[in-house]
Image (tube, rainbow, N blue to C red; front, side):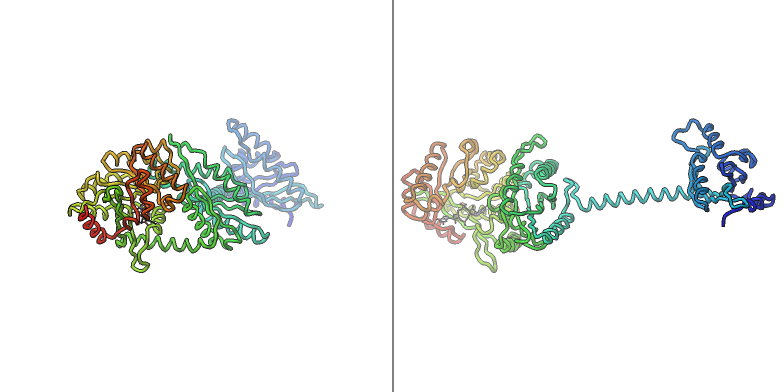
Length: 595
Ligand SMILES: Nc1nc2c(ncn2[C@@H]2O[C@@H]3COP(=O)(O)O[C@H]4[C@@H](O)[C@H](n5cnc6c(=O)[nH]c(N)nc65)O[C@@H]4COP(=O)(O)O[C@H]3[C@H]2O)c(=O)[nH]1
C-alpha cells in the first residue's frame, strides 16, 4: 500500500515524531531530489553524523557524504554511505513500489551494513513526490554471515585438498591406485560404447630396491620423480599415468586402434628411460619391465585387466628385465602357480623343508675329488622333491633368495666341516651365491661369523656367481668380491659363456675360476661351434691365469675332449649326480679308499 502526502502529514504530527524520534531503527523521508524532509535521531546519529534532527532537512546524502569524506580524508579505498545509497532512491521512484536493499558504506571509518526498506510516496493526485525509508544496522549479522561464508570457502578448499590427496600420490603428484582404478573403469566404459580398445601398461622398475637399499630413500624418491617426469613427457594428453605404490606405475592408453602400434609407443617410452639419471652425484641407469593387457581381449573389468597386466609384467621380469610382454592366458595359470609357490616357499624356509645335495668336482687327470658343489633341493611334504630351477628364480624375484642362500650356506658348511673333521678329504666347498646376497650390507660379517663358528678354513670355500648376474652390475660387485677374495675365499663365474662378459671386467674382478656352462658341453665333441667355444674359454682361462672347470659332463667322449683341450676339472653325471648327505658320505668313504 503506497504512502500518500496526506499520510506523511499525518505521520509528521508531533506525536508521531515523538514516537519515531527515539526508535533504534532509522527512519526518514526524502523528496524527489533526495533531500531530507524528515530524519529521526537514529539516522542522524548513526549515519549522517548530523548535529540534530533538524540539520538534514533540505540537505541530501551527498552533503553528509562529502562531510564524512573530508573528516576521513586520510583513509584510502573508503566509501561513505551516502555516495552509494542515493542511487537506490531513484530505483524505488522508477519502480514505483516498496523495495528492500542491503546497503553498506563507511561511517566514522567503520564499515556499516544496513538493511533498508524504501518506498515511494505520492501527493493527493497520485504523483510521486518522494521516498520514505527505514533502515536497520545489520553490521554484526552481516559480519557473522561473511565470516561464515569465508569459513565455508576455507572448508571447501580443505575438502578439495583432502579429496586431491586421497586420489594422488604425494611424491610424484600422479593419480594413485584409487583414482587410477576409477579412470580405468571410465576408459573401459567409453571403449565399450565406441567399440574401441584400451591398453593397460603395468610397469615395474628394475633393481629399484637395490637403489633404495644402497643409496638411501632420498635418492630412491628422486628416481621415482624423475621416472614419472620422463614417462609423462612421452605420453599423449588423453592417457593416464599413475603410481600404484613403490616402484610400480601404470599407464592407460585410450583409443588403441592397432595393437601392433603399441610396441612403438612402449619402445619409445623405454628409450626415454635409457638415458642415465644424475642424482645426488650418482649416475644411475634405471630399466623397467612392462606387462601389457588390452581391453576387451584380456579382460572386461578394471581389476582383471590390472591382474593380467601384472602377470605379463612378471613374465617380462623373468625374460631378463628391461623388456615388455603382452598378456596371454597361460600367464594366469603361471601367476596362480607363482602365488601358490611363493607362499609355499616362505613356509618351506620357516619349516626347514630345504635340504642340501652335493655334487663332486673331479680332477679328471688325477681321478681325484677336488671339491663339491652344494645344491639346494626342496622336499615338499605333498609335492615331493622339487629342483632349484623351479623355485630359485622366484626366490630371486621376491628377495627370499637372501634368506635361502644363507640357510643353504649354514647347512652345507656344517656338513662339510663334519666330513673334514672325519678325515674324508672333501676338498673345496663351492656355494652358489645370488648377487642380491652380496648387495646386503652385513654379508661379509655374516660370512665371517659362520665360517668362524664352523671353524672352517676360508681357503676351502668357493663362491659361484652366474656370469649374467655379475656382468649386469660389475662395478657394484667389485668391492664385496674383493673383500671375499682378501679373506682367502675363491670366486668362480658360473654358466660362463651364456652372458656377455667384458674382458676388461674379467681382468678387474677378483676371479679365480670360470665354469664352462653345460649347454656348450652337451653336444661335444660333434658340434663344431660348441667345440670352438669350449676351446676358446679354456684358452682364455689359460691367458688370464684362471682355473677352469666344465660342468654337465655326462659321457666319456665329452670328458676326453675337455681333458685333451686343457681343462682337467670336471663336474657332471659322468662322475656323479648331486648326492644326498648319506650318499655323499658313502661316496667320500669309497673315494678315500681308492686314493
Ligand atoms: N643335465 C645335467 N645336469 C647336470 C650335470 N651335472 C650337474 N648338473 C646340474 O647342473 C646344475 C649345476 O649347478 P649350477 O650351474 O650352479 O646351477 C644351479 C644354480 O644356479 C641354482 N642353484 C642350486 N642351488 C642353489 C642355491 O643354494 N643357491 C642359489 N642361489 N642357486 C642355487 O640352480 C641351478 C640348477 O641346479 P640343479 O638343478 O641342482 O642343477 C645342477 C646340477 O644338478 C650333468 O651332467 N647333466
